[in-house]
Length: 107
Image 1 (cartoon, rainbow, N blue to C red):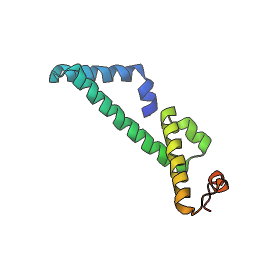
Image 2: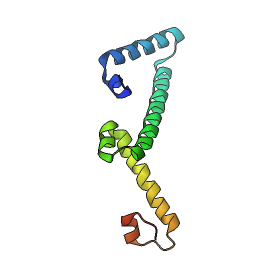
Image 3: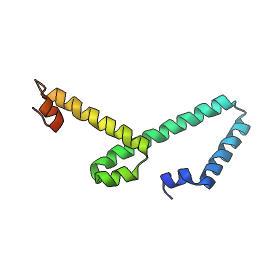
Image 4: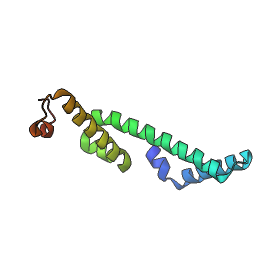
């Protein structure tokens, strides 16, 4: 089972919840501390997902790539790629022209 399938599996969710509940009861931590740790794990997971989606964007057909990743990763990856291309165009062009921005090619 892949990561995407595990995240939707009720058994997987139940195991994670039991693990976290056990962690909280053993450590005697407050809910706020537990939620902060959970948020940190979520950010790390999103960072890894985004990194992997950007790497696979180069190697996969675009339509296939769209169906392979969560919407949040797709939207953010698209924004990153767009910003990179526009920034590169401004760096290369001495006198930006609207036609060069539309075509994504250097002046």
